[in-house]
Image (cartoon, rainbow, N blue to C red):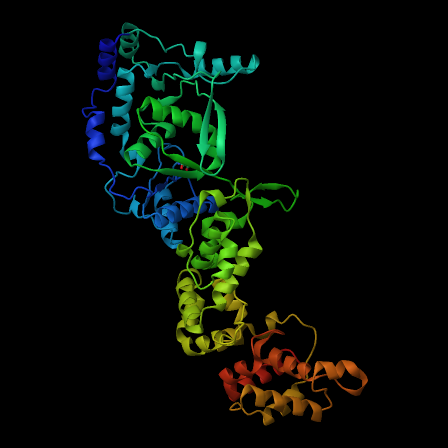
Length: 552
Ligand code: GLU
């Protein structure tokens, strides 16, 4: 076919495409950004729940764009409508908002480089493909499913590369007349790339994270437009990243093998390719087999974004964790600069892990505990309130009507140099402070007490006669020690250990008895603080409750 015929064919195939490539180039003017500004994008497909790995790549998009004063945009990649699930797009935007990974532009956000949803861009893709046809770089392929399967079978038998290329690309050189005939017969077709590649040649691509990568040149006549005229992901991504002027494609490394195709598409379309940064997957040690595998939504609760919301993992702590896995030197930096914000750190691709990054539940839990330890009672109360409103409405009501007492409990042991570190997520509050709200304590009281020891109610009641809640902590402790000695207990565990036969126990045993009666637990924050908040009446009520429920 000569140029004239190809132009005729292009018109025939795309009668409704009226714009030209130049029209679109004008509609997407050059971004006004600094030379080093990065334009990144998160391109999720709305195919179901969001994986932590997706969030992680979106987090990287965000930090690199932010630190270079560039732009981070959200593009919905819904070229595969068959895999799209209902509510999938809303889920993506709500997860991003919930996790505070906020694009500066894009779908659901503002922006001048849209539409930011691939299913709304069909005409744009067709315009560029129309031009590829004119330039002899694409062609309609009328092969049926049956024919394709036959080729695949044949290729499998002779153990050659699967796909449409070389001799298998039978529709590559159809004449205009032949094509017209097939169109007149209403034969279905896709548009394929007329790949100019040669698999005997090697190409080198430099990935920002993985470094130099060598590949065979792409030589497949890959599908660009499907039978219904909508694009494949490969084509859509290339045209979008060109028009939207992405500077860095940061994405999961399952896409590395598609790189030769993507680079070729940039070339045939006459675009300058962006830089690529392929992120290693998050891995985990399989409990059953002991092998390292990808973090899986099916097997690992920690893999799904929803889990974090449901459990009430604080976003700031999760961001710290994501920063830790993003750059290997972040953790050390943060240890020395814990007063600083993540945005004060400069992320680099050089410090990004090349192999799989192992997911470390303990590290995340620890970061969460540190997060809570730095928050005062009022702050923890407010955040827990917001969490329970959505995930535990009954507890939310209780929190609302017990604000002062709850804040007081949450404030225990917060002032010292080593603030209390017990909570790692909002859902822990109810359990850890189960004794704080009367209604809850009365309902559950000692059901969670896991000890088999029974405590001396009379001894505790006797002690209560001595108790002065206006004392300082030191005075209180002095007082209970004296009481212990009077009753034949050692004033310290150390004394007791020296001559256990001399004593019934030590002061700690009396404290434990009081603690269990007041809280239903053998471990709690500072006991005297708890007693002060409860007040003498409630203290007595709880001892009576203990007597009724536990003591025989
Ligand atoms: N839509 C692709 C996915 O969900 C994104 C690939 C890319 O970022 O280029 O995996």
